[in-house]
Image (cartoon, rainbow, N blue to C red; front, side, top):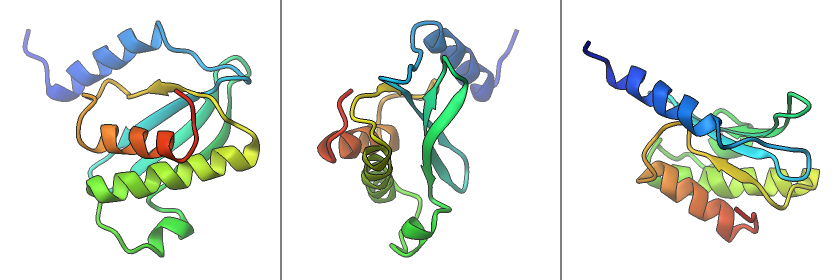
Length: 119
């Protein structure tokens, strides 16, 4: 049976989610990339709550006037880490959403690490 690349990514993400879960002390850093935007959420899976979030639609990011590329992913990672620190999050579990750890995903995670988050 033929599967689309989206179906394959969803299956990888479900397999990944069996191992990765966020708690209040160490929330899950979930990334999502669409055709037009990038989203980052810090999720407590035990309580079922989003503790903090950031995206390319945020006012702070729009002011940077960046395109949706690797440079923008670095800026978003730094912005997300600053929001997480403001809420009191220092350590996270990284959820790449079934995407390959390459390009924008890698740039976002490394920028978040440089901004002070522990993975």
